[in-house]
Amino acid sequence: MSGIGKGIATASIGRILKSSGFNVSAIKIDPYINVDAGTMNPIEHGEVFVTEDGTECDQDIGNYERFLDQNILDENYMTTGRVYQTVIEKERNLGYGGRCVEVVPDIPNEVIRRIKKVARDTKSDFVLIEIGGTVGEYQNLLFLEAARMMKLMHPKDVIFILVSYLPVPKMIGEMKTKPTQYAVRTLNSAGIQPDIIIARSEYPVDDKRKEKLSIFCNVKKEDIISAPDVESIYEVPLNFEKENILNRILTKFRLKPSKKDLTEWKKLVKKIKNPKRKVKIGIAGKYFRSGKFTLMDSYISVIEAVKHASFSFEAKPEISWLDTEEYEKKFGEEKLKELKNFDGIIVPGGFGNRGIEGKIKVIEFCRKNKIPFLGLCLGMQLAVVEFSRNVCGLKNAHSTEMNPKTKYPVIDLMEDQKNKLKEKKYGGTMRLGAWNCKIFPNTISFRAYKSNFVSERHRHRFEVNNAFKSNLEQNGMVIAGVNPELNLIEIIELPQEKHPFFVGTQFHPEFKSRPLRPHPLFREFIKKSINE
Image (cartoon, rainbow, N blue to C red; front, side, top):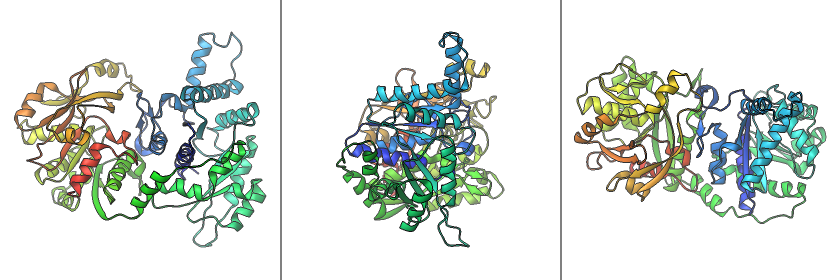
């Protein structure tokens, strides 16, 4: 089933292989027709992660980057839409020499071509390929066909790992292997036999269950890797290593056992499991309600960046979800007082009108009550709106995204975006990927980065309107960073003598945070939140 941790399993295996001296890369294959993840609702799909070269992709690419501590680029991301688009364009350009182009083998062959290109371009010893979705779904059959064909072409260079769930029904109290048996049978029907099974469950998988899976799934007992629930995802590589997954993989490739160095990772996990303090962080957003359930995947990079920074101070983050629509309702002003219970507040990115006035009220409360505040993308833009309204006296100032007729458009559509939206060019047309930012001295951001120039990732169409820049500065707002090429405002702050930490960024610093290298701005935010 989906959501059991294929991405974390892939990233963890990558980490283990990399710690053993191998060059590793990872590819995510998503079976949807969308060309990329940029036009999808985050409540439905989870966070849209942005790569250094500007691809809007699945959140698992973010997991790969965090675990491998390396950038994963555009060519490492594949969707059904992308593959078909390439094949159709090639056919239109007579790339197939006029022959009949067919779903099989031409679609799987394009998948294989892309995989081999990643291997060549990244000079990798291992390329980990995660096929999204669930075994048995119609959508990923062509990718399974590509996998089968690769094994046929390169029998000594391809192995298959199945991640499957072993439930423990409460009314029975016994771990059940039958769903995994059926998953393997279904995979067999696609011409694929798993070499290793990662057995996900609430509890460790015992020998009896491993023996049963071995018999019915045609997999050696030692190739069944127990993967119980853990407190932190960063424990997963260490758990896999206890199960000897590295040597099982190397044995199948006829490679000699390799020494591994997970020293830094072990130190990280030790810090995570032995915190010396707590820090309470509120995330004020709107993309986490899914029926009666809370969907954390919408802000996964923000969550992980908070964790990375907290771990560096040996602190355990306690993250709470603040639905900004609640602050717009009757008695919302009274409800705002709960923000005093938090050590720091983050207002992340987003789109559209829903919950906007609630976010602005949260920002105002943080500013007036000196609660450490970090605004990301839309969060930064709304901090400018709030300051314009309540400090600069620009009544009803707003973003033209929310109110196209506002008298004071302090946030406005970027010039190059206007024609794109007129022509309804939405997919892949925002300001995306890494852009330079010049940091000014004597600012919070300069103290955090310890650098005059940085590069950060973006995903937006609207920006701070430079026509209001002098008004903002005259009333006490600090412009801490700008893009030198386009003169766009990248970072706003309040002076530290007026507020302990009030920072907003047009970019998304969370995309570049790593567990062993927390992002400087998140680290500074957590530092002020715990009064370090």
